[in-house]
Length: 431
Ligand SMILES: Nc1ncnc2c1ncn2[C@@H]1O[C@H](COP(=O)(O)OP(=O)(O)OP(=O)(O)O)[C@@H](O)[C@H]1O
Ligand SMILES: [Mg+2]
Image (cartoon, rainbow, N blue to C red; front, side, top):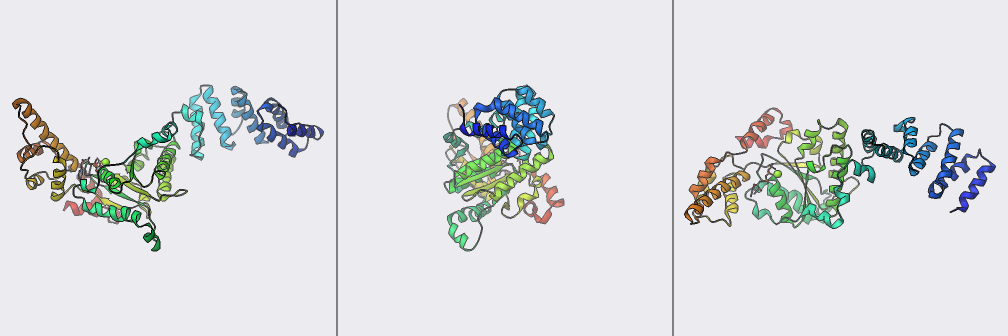
């Protein structure tokens, strides 16, 4: 199909072939029309002869050849050029050419470089070939809901942890309920809470309960979900998760094992590690986005591996130690966990005393052991009997507290690397 404008420009260029303006106009117009691809190739080749240093002609020519499926021609052209000087779309075409020729390594390298420059760059063919996590592209809108949950537990299901509950209330729940009041005092809402402590002591549990408490959505982002060998792709994943959360406010965004960012840093190429941290900080800061209604809770067992940049104001500016439950909390947890199981005359105080160093998870384990015994008995005798204090004490003797090792490590950091009193709480607890 002929195009009037293009025909006129062709005539004009014939009349004055040295007119650069007409030439570039014509090239521009032709490129917008599929029908002119062959003619455009001829024109570009002519133009390059006239101006061998004009890079944009060469880039356009590569695009044209690619349209014609002339893959090896594209590659020959590309090899004569300095890739870094080309535009990202051209580079992505070249990457695709290598891919189609079966040179995956080269394609990968080029795509990696593109993502280095612009980590939001997307290309379906390259993304698919390198199996970049296409979780988000492959999920239909309604399917994205599977990433969210609406927790059914709330603060009343969490035994003890009064300090943590208070902090969460103050920092996260109150601001959400009193948006205008905070605004009047010019107090910015945002930032997050970082929970740290030995394993099994309720960090994940209380984050979920927070969502349940305010009837919010809950999304958990494990670093394993986002960290990708692909430079640039981890950032994209992280950004997608945050964007998704922003579309589902109010939403508790739970970042499990945030320390993995720091720890993995040495595994990743240096620049990649930095990029993901920067991306993470940008998401926390709500740069280019609105974090209203996002409640950010991070958790880690190894706060000493955490990048210090995380702790700046507006980010994780509340760092809370989640210790193993004290006696009262242990009693509360025990009662919660025994609810619904047959039990009788439990001496909660005694059990709390005999389970020093136990985490909430350890209490679960102890109850499990006791339950198994009761089941065995019931199967031999045929008579189900309730759990008693003795059963739990016997089970406790079989299960070793899982927080002990953690404190051995933590103590060293608290004693020798206690910058700005960050770990005072650990020392206080250990006294
Ligand atoms: N305060 C608590 N009240 C009720 N249950 C608790 C409490 N603390 C822990 N638990 C129980 O212990 C289990 C483990 O807790 P959770 O997974 O929250 O630990 P965590 O601190 O996130 O551990 P990790 O550091 O290993 O991720 C929970 O599923 C819950 O059943
Ligand atoms: Mg956890």
